[in-house]
Length: 282
Image (cartoon, one colour):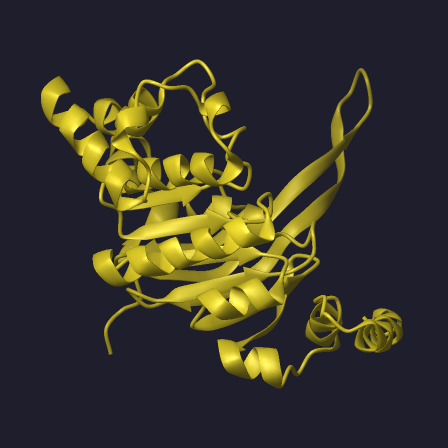
């Protein structure tokens, strides 16, 4: 069997709690991530779902080595990332990129669209100024953004357009893995559907692998091959997306499903009652 593109094993991220003014000492730890394991085969999507504060984003940042894990293993394309430092890790970062939750906060407001998308190419010393300019136009067209707007600034665009810019930037280095950290939660519902469809189209065209983070199980179901449900730093359920959504085994997963809105007032009242019941057992 082929090795998965990303394999995370017993990942832990503990933040120290310090106390004292003159003699600063560690009195405990916040276990943001505590023994998380999952695998993502190349070309597939793992949906990581849970409420705010469950440790989803911390898990993703540790997998990318943006946060150094306290313990555990992270293997990407057969290489152990926790053992890499400096230039070795920097070269491998070309193959791992991220799309952030807030499409405005993640874009430098003082840079034009063209400079934002070209920045990864320039940082890694790829191409000439002319070739980078051509690459920017191609990338913007790929995400459905008009290349004629390359000299405009982020504040001149809607949230959905800004997120397309962020996706184009993530694609600039031709990565294998993209972490999508709640990429549609800040967008209107109709725009969410457009961005999700774009991500799925890009995956088919480019063979991308996604770690897709969200708190909405319905969104995760539409994107994922496999779903992992996180609660208080641990994975409480993991399995094929359709099975987890239709036949959840964990009370916490059932509570998340009960929180998904439906266009039926009576059904929503039933879900609220179910959510209160399940909350008492989690």
